[in-house]
Image (cartoon, rainbow, N blue to C red; front, side, top):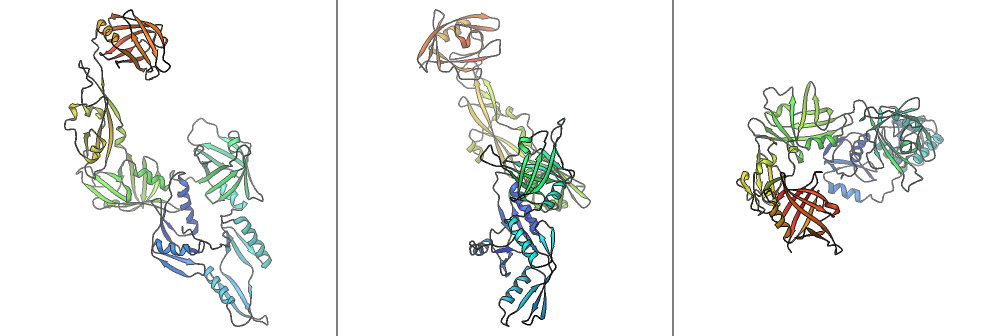
Length: 601
């Protein structure tokens, strides 16, 4: 929390991590911060201390810090401090010392209750002016490892050995001993949270059984056989190694010897040396127990910020229904569905080891749910909470999901001038929102954002170019929040009344290009020059090479038929479905579409 090696922060302290409030009561609670940092791979992690706080210096002096600048000043003084602490073992207090005089007679017995008292006692001994003092630690004493295990020490030699072993295995990380690793692995089950930085194995849960058998289950698949194998742990010079073997599947991915490089009771990071690539394979395992919610505090926060939510509660007698909007900066807005009035309050997510809590603070009439709600069920679309005998359920509603960028197409009639009249309201006719939303249309996104130059009659809008993009603005009239959606206006040449003579006369004017061949522009680089003798000169403009083919027209009940021969890509019969003097749309019996456009340059 402090990024300093010569001071510590006195607990408890409240921090905000990625917009989630956490109260750190013990050193073990620091794992809550690590879990949030590790929750998403590519997000930006931010930790904010709530001041004032109290820091403890190396001499155990306590100083009240009122802001970040004051803390930074202390941190700057200790950046080069050499931290020789053994982080993963400590005394189990109380301990006692016997003080002897020079005649080896006990003159005092001192009982020590904590690190601070021990520090001051050692300073007293070091600075004593009363002559030589002999001090002896009274055995037996109990030492406590970071994972909670204890060991009893009976003399100075044992104490030196235990401390040296702890220093070698610590490396400033919480060192797990083999016994603790085995116990942790068999508690609950484990999710493959990360595999080389991705979540491709996130759906697979690993069960480490007491008899050494291993079971891997894909929770999201049905009809898929479970994967079995064998597991064991061993102690090596490098640390604790988890060995996985005899897997019925994924042996290449998950099998082998995995060194545990980070160890917590509910999260392991493992690394396997891989001889075939330069990088090692790394796995992060997270413990999952039966009472696990299924989503993290960060996911709860992310879900609530999406779309809008409807609420149900046993406290809602005579309370009007409302739409809940969980906004940034912890602002909670409830739109009263009856009056369209907006009620503004506050929301927050708090995290402890025991639970994720949603804090709600709203004025009347929704003050009835202004409580601290423990989340009991969690999903992307439904979140249930309890407070004593009361419950509160939120269900997500995403009204804008109906909206997406779309295209309106109209025919230009007989004018061939790229213009038509559009009914813009038809673009999203099936999308319905509550009365607090307004729909307005604009010719530019800038005008839409600023509410300028609104299209006055959206049911009779004439396009100004072909194609043209206009914008629908869906706005909550109570809070001003809005979203923009694009509507592309496209005018087609829909005059299908061309006669065979008209088609012939159009084709004989200038040259033509295949601008669209069934959705592709692969043939756009060819010029087609139609001749009176029913010959066609096709020129590849990329290499300036030409060859000849044949064409003919005839009138059928389906329209004008154009036949192409000796032109490999477009050989066959084509019906003219859209006809204009400079643009023709052709279809064949296979459903292929050709768009020809005239080029008189």
